[in-house]
Length: 488
Image 1: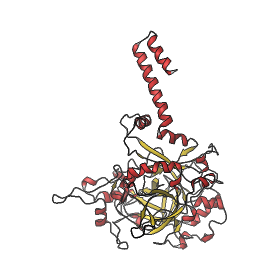
Image 2: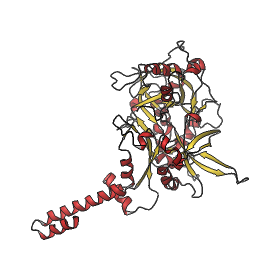
Image 3: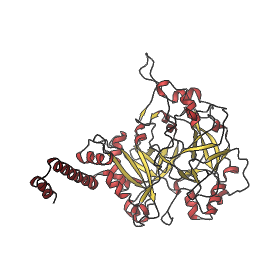
Image 4: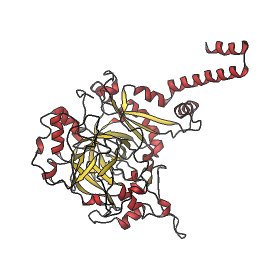
């Protein structure tokens, strides 16, 4: 039919330009149809038809470099401290997701650090011994360019959709490391309308292996290392959509072809208690537990503190992107480093809330300062390590901001390997989780909420280790867990 239509354009009288335009439209339509049928991006989008993206449309951090956020230490402040932005990091050390509201659970914010990428190493002394170890931007800075999205079911979702039965998914995206083909170029063009756009790889990682998938996927529970501790997770590398994309992700990250590579998923059975910098049980109720975060469930940071450090950097390293520090909660209207004096704080819901949330002000215990590593040195736009300009007699510059943090922000000596300190580790208190459970509503935190510090001693609402016994469903929600019986 298409061929007959094209022939009619050349046999019937009419304007030649019109015929050319119509022919181009038909050819573009054909190209678009091919991209829809065979393009990686469109295949991914079709799979998400019964899900919704939880990420915010715009960013609340686009003005982060504004001097109004640079409050000096001990500066006089008018008005309350506010939450400016919220971030989740579904895959440890990959790109974050900015959200306008996040569900607070016993293990931190739901979906935060619930996956980790790992490589397998074979012990040279005993070929029968293999160990898995997580990878991060410390050695693979290109992980910062692996973009992530979270998609979850909504009220109108088809319950028979496999991804709905898996309670949603994480979508991972990165630039295609292989030589482009005409199909990948066409797919990129149809997505961006830029003829020079780099083709993209996207793939789906379900949040859970639904019951009907268990026999097919056979995801094994394996142990792998995160820093100095052993973690455990389900090996999701056996899921077809994941297995098909991992070879390209290996090439993108520069992992040797012969080295095994997978992605692990945290489960309720793999949660561990924190064993360092313990928060007082008198405040938090029951011991803190976490999945793939570094010890503590929540990290909070202040734009004023980042501005203060940025001002100390060499001119060529300014301004510094606050997102290098990978906090969950970003606050404004507090003097620089003021958060280091906090012991406990309460999050007060903003006025005019329209979405359902528990009528509870979450209370958070502040545990310790965040010791920094080399990851803040990664340029998030390039996936490379930043340095200052080297001296004439030097071949390389010094890593930044680590060099500056070590010089100006080594304010304690408990961690010999710390490259300075910035930000605070925190733990949610059981009392507010319990009250939200009694209301049968989620304990949400939203952008625009206010921070109240010096909240005093616990009010006697002790929940201890019985927090999760009264309502199994809400217990799972507070731990950041869904199963097939949970509504969406």
